[in-house]
Image (cartoon, rainbow, N blue to C red):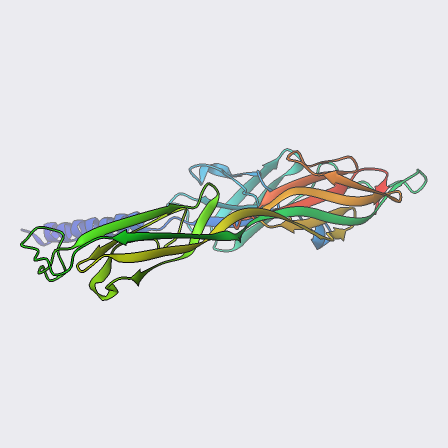
Length: 325
């Protein structure tokens, strides 16, 4: 083999290794995932609301698909593996109630915060027109809870009949050591619909109690139905089964508090267990209770709500024109 052919072979081998290493690194490269949030543009930070259902896409085909912001405005979108950090990038944001936005930036690990401008800007009341005054606002809701009330007790006596000192001879039931003939007795109680037993106990109260034992415990955990089985390998004994009867009751606890007001909007958050939400307010001095309902309808405000990850619910109600707090 000539020196020239040897050199060509070496360079070919090096090039093949380099291409293989490059392909291996490209295959192992972790794609970049962009994360960020979409909020409403406003000079007042208290009014920069998170925007849900905003469509987000990446221009120039740098991502497999677009995404949509969630209830708190959060979004994440994964780019193709070939896209590297530092590469120019254009994020496109579209929402029916806001002006389109194109964010020209670069691929990196930073947070991408998009501020969308409303198509319809907030209107301020005309001071020369009559205005409806909304005041003394309270949010009211109920939280259901259960409680137990003692409505009585239950007692049942039962006997386990047997004769003492009778050899078992292998005919079950026998004493624990298999020597003496035994007998098994049982009893049960029903607390009734909507009730349950608590603090149930069973005791031997008469007869040769040392020669007995509880065979099956169906009472100590309580519940609507309780039962017990007992073994006796001496003379007849008497057992007593006792328990407290509890009734489960549903309670609706009414709670209320004052919402926070920023500008022309009021804000409040309710726990996941909140039911029957209503707003009590004075309209031009007259106290009225307004049930919010599933449609979030108020005659004097436009309301919206979103659900957090912990299932708490965030409400915001903006005054309609010609109304003021």
